[in-house]
View 1 (cartoon, rainbow, N blue to C red):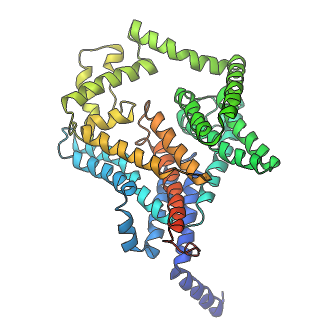
View 2: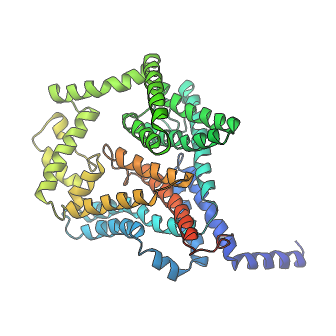
View 3: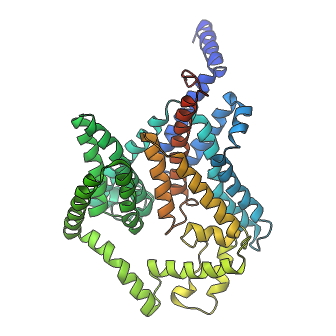
Length: 428
């Protein structure tokens, strides 16, 4: 490379280094990369999240960012993290366990950063498109692995699950299938039949995979709730009646045609009876055991809880002298409310529910971003009845990215309508 070329490249890089728009674009790219890799990887998501924060610093308006932290939608996720840190002071668990238990709350600190960034960015929808594209690729890979298990990207993979696990995969597929309902209806009302049919085929592909390949029982329970939320918000009651009847018929046909779906639904009662009659540690039986013990732990320290990282030690003590399901030890009671209640008592529950409530209120109104954000919160709330999905890596990041990006887009729209943000302020 000649000296002139080197000087030209150096000058260009120097201008880009000093250009806030270039840094903002780079930050957008890293969020898109988080959405692309979330269905496939945990390490890449963490790497891109750190890179996002680094690229936000050069153009960050610290005064405006600190002011945004005063919003309750930002303050409450921070408060939950702060409570986890403070809870290490009254916990009896080893310090390693205390610090490890703080880890799942760290991702919540990304919410204020995403709110701030996408209140100014114009590329929020690209993030959701990236997640949908990645999930469609996972859908295709799921069918491939169902017929050729050796092609799975991990050893000992479950049937039809190329990466991670069937619970994470079901969460993604259910979210994408229901989220597509809004643009499908919007396109149909606008007379754009071809794109509406393409999106309908995509949504149907997710549903068919869950019916005939693999689905979690959590998704079976929560997906109808998500669909009901959409119907109540966006469809007329006569349309709802027709769709409800059609869904019942299609569900009956799917159940009849799919041995996998029959097995998944019938295991609810079977697992409960095995647990009650023979003390066998089935999935449902273990959850009932964990919930009963967690309620007892909570009653012993109802205000402040037992402290961060205390859950496993409490279950170890409760397992002494028991056999079967009663002897199981776990650090996660598979219920978000109880997980927080055991460690931080009523204070933690209030912070969690206040955060959920305010994030729900953020997504009132019309628009695709509003619908996606609302759906992410609704899914997280109801799936957290059976798991600790704020603290789980995959589902927790689905919440952070979905709520953070959609929330920023909604905040930007609100600021414009109030005349607080100029129309050209988000050019980057």
